[in-house]
Image (cartoon, rainbow, N blue to C red; front, top):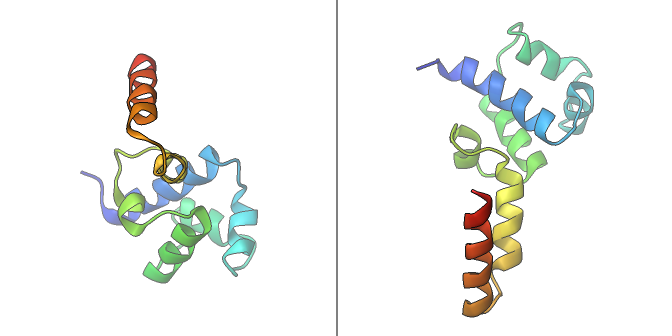
Length: 103
């Protein structure tokens, strides 16, 4: 298993890429120098827990989602869950069947 710093670097890069966000834009959006995320991803700097918290807020994901390496595009999954929460039972069953066909 890779160490937590390597995992965090890769996770940040993957979240950015999945959402089409540049390292520069993410850096500036979390209040850092324009090269901050690049330095983390290249191993020149280590992310702090505060940085990870800001990144989670930026992508609207929990820290649990951030560290769940099996979960791809957690922000999209969370958005989908939010959208279906108010649906009735029959509609949820229909959506479940549709999702199974794509799996």
